[in-house]
Image 1 (cartoon, rainbow, N blue to C red):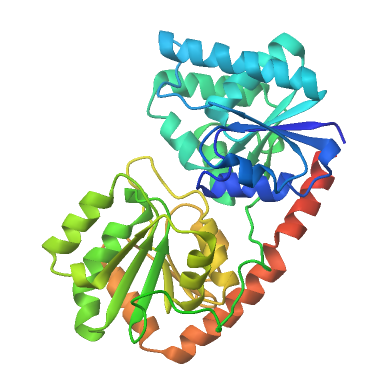
Image 2: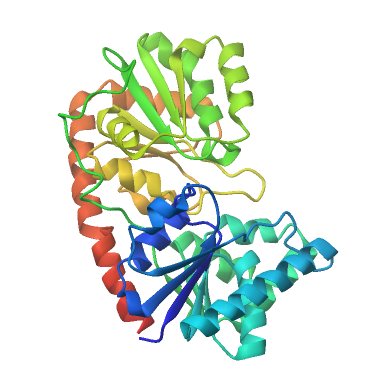
Length: 379
């Protein structure tokens, strides 16, 4: 295998599904085949010591992804310089970019200057957002044109590139994220999270942003509380929407039914997955922002829990509708309340869906299986 440099701002311990995906896949490659150039943040040393690979940390964040501004141009020149130096030191023969923008621009500059080819990952919402700007659209087209391959995280992302970007199907492949089925697994001996005893608990894990739909689940709570007075909606994750969500819950009179955990450690997250009665990702499209895949849905199913997901973006590819969970139009809270009521009123259905979900992810989304497939592909 030609030595790979995984080049991504998003990487653990920074929270984010794509970063976890990259660490799980490339972290299973032989250490001589992969090096990492990833974002710098607090607490990286503990995580980096878990992998045998060479991990280079660098500030890969910028408020400006265009090149017409001085800020954006300086960012790309600085990043390209670092990328070029690491590629030379590590003997890199191919670069794999976590996103088309901004990582792909620096990789294109490296290809022009050093002849090193690159591949780019596409997550769906990233290329949708790029369409809102002429400059970002132009940059995205240039990066994808000169990439050796574009890796789509779902059939939905593949469709977006084919229909909205006119990208040739022959240039694209689909590689879905997965889940550690040994790490995320049922375990009834795990203590219940604080405040969960004697309640019906719905859980959402993810950044607090509109497309994730935490606000829509909160809007569904008044109806749910009429049927289940002991309902509890637990939200794991941080983000700028938290004040708005807290205000909404207070305004609707359901603040006592909402539990904000913020960011949690691994043990706390697993406990929540294992003991929730229903996992919900009530995602919806907001403008050009859509859910590309939904790794948290895999994690919940791996823990043997039934799932409810929005019928938008790539989430339908994570579950078997009617078997491991249910798809819902989450643009209206009434739809969410109705679907959740039907599920929570039928414990036998919840149990069977949870069991089917565990089998589903074991068979299709194990990291070991996906990493093995990736090794063959990249070789």
